[in-house]
Length: 265
Ligand code: MLZ
Image (tube, rainbow, N blue to C red; front, side, top):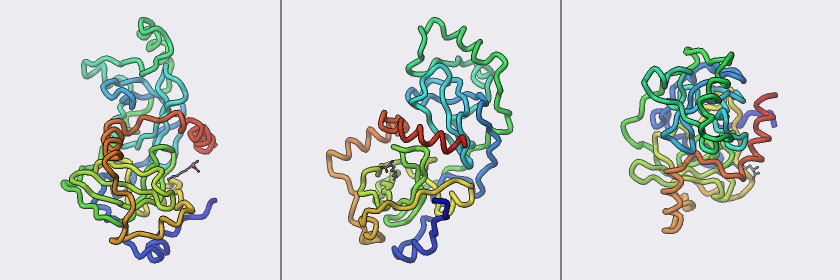
């Protein structure tokens, strides 16, 4: 619905506390989003992170943009913050002496890429340099504590930012558990991930926040929180998730179709 999630009541109900803002690699005030649908830019290919590709903005929500790689398909869209270090103005790579690459799954013969590039950039709507905001500082340590609440991107439905809890902490990594979803969307990530936000970030940033799901699992929180510690088998998934954290499964494609209708309306 349209109602704003009431964090204050929820923290009281669950007798939990919010992870302090200094734990997160996020600016205190979200930068302005100057991107508009149709604008082009350079972006790291999330499925092939050594490649810089041309991308088009296909959606704008709060300080995040939805991107589609030019020459790719429409099933692998991804979301980035406007202060992501993975976004650059058109021309950046060439200036640095690098070469733009076709996206993974380029729909033409690779030999046609140079001509494709000329055509896709000819008369294109370039994102202005001012739209690219500087990346926040990285906190020097992992200061998260088990049981603390936060807002986090659901990596299976990356248009969604949801109510979450720190389920575990291990060296530089944290286990993000989604309240009320019985573990189905939980993941490990680095403490300096750009996909996690302090309580209140969505409200301040004009971004929708998904409330907890209906599972009663969410009632178990705080220091007695017992869910989420992965067994050995899950730990290997964990490593894969960390290596390949933004790879979108085909399952997310239909959710994303719903997402673009929301973001473009
Ligand atoms: N369409 C999905 C959305 C789930 C979102 C969960 N986020 C933690 C479903 O209802 O299963």
